[in-house]
Length: 157
Image (cartoon, rainbow, N blue to C red; front, side, top):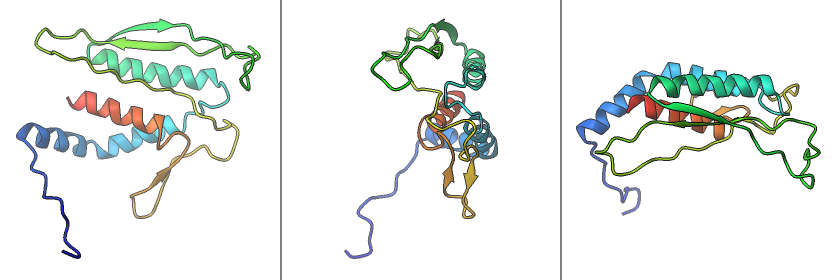
């Protein structure tokens, strides 16, 4: 069996195919969205960039029918680096969409908006490899990229 895949091809339902095609049609917009969020310098308690990032996601979630509650963040404890209380903790946005009676389950999507990267450092931009298969940038492969993907999925659904 050398050289043969043990996995059989996956057959998508009509709904899954339609969702895949909807997301694929937005490829360029998704890359632009990723670039926008990766290049907002949210490291180092940069409150202006954090506020902008939060506002952009809130606006899109509210367009999908969510209501938003802003909750003050908790200060870092003194024993953590940067926990001296010098920086005001960022606000947490809790966005909820009323659950339909026909929907038996809820889904929680949670994430953070900040990165550990210095807003004034050299690592501030999204870079795409020439073959188009690899992207790097602050938050690209963890939360910023994950939130862009989650938002795209919610909008497609």
